[in-house]
Length: 395
Image (cartoon, rainbow, N blue to C red; front, side, top):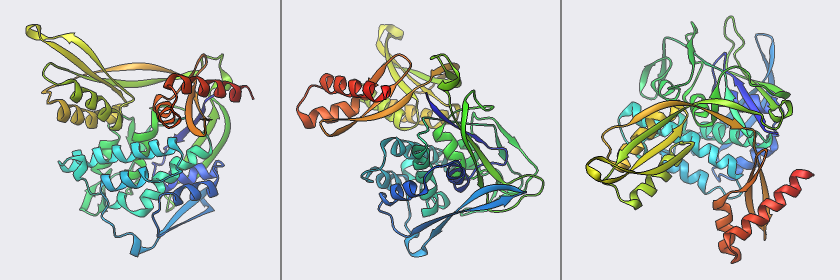
């Protein structure tokens, strides 16, 4: 079975609301705090308590920050390094957090016309945002959520004030992050969806739409900072088991985009790096296909599969790395079968194993790392990991 979390963004989404909703649904606050401590970043404290919004009970999350520790000018590289250096952070939570900030860096890059590496995070680079994003990923881990999806996203109107002064509402970064996602405006003159909230959706949501087919196991509400007239200012999360209602073929449809370009003057080394860079930038998959190009030249089609919201950032990566002057894109429907991820040990080294309806598949990178340390063939490490996962799955 696959554990699914669906965010109902009828009143928008912010980082504190996302984490609050998961805590309200049963995520362990102590686990979240312990994971955040691995970032080795001092000067923050979390408080979570019950409140109501328009009569609806919800969890209000407050991140208290010591101003002396919140003066660091954080770039995408700074945050990436902080998360990467957090020894002991669950690997899936680490990957998710990196993906969220990569989406944010890509959006800020597009808004300000600079490279992602030059982006300096301001509001979203503060300690509270770092805690919100990594804390949300840790809360998903606490609930063993393998798949995140969301409803259409509500946004406000008017203007908001940020570091750069008065900005339209929704903010430019929010619009960029939600490109390709279903969004609807409201008459609320407040910032319903923040850049941090939009980045969480861009980096984590596999699809957008109504509540997916699942056996509901938990639900929760994360409260926004204020009461709003006419609607509860909360983010709802519904958690459930996708495979519990199916026949072994349970899964979900995803509306995705394939971005591709033909190149005939790029070296193999650069192409390999490009595929890796596309994955880091948020592609769900990336690949190369050799072709016979114009004038009989050997070439390659470079392709990336992605959420629509990640398309702009991936296009920039593809152009920067290959020098291509154009792209093609087409929409595809992907059926993602139910799966989960188990972690086992081989010779004392952790190895993640993907478990689908018909197969156990050990993660190659984990196997290669363990094989190098144990002096064993990669195939042997993979076999041991998959056998351990099968035994674990039967228990």
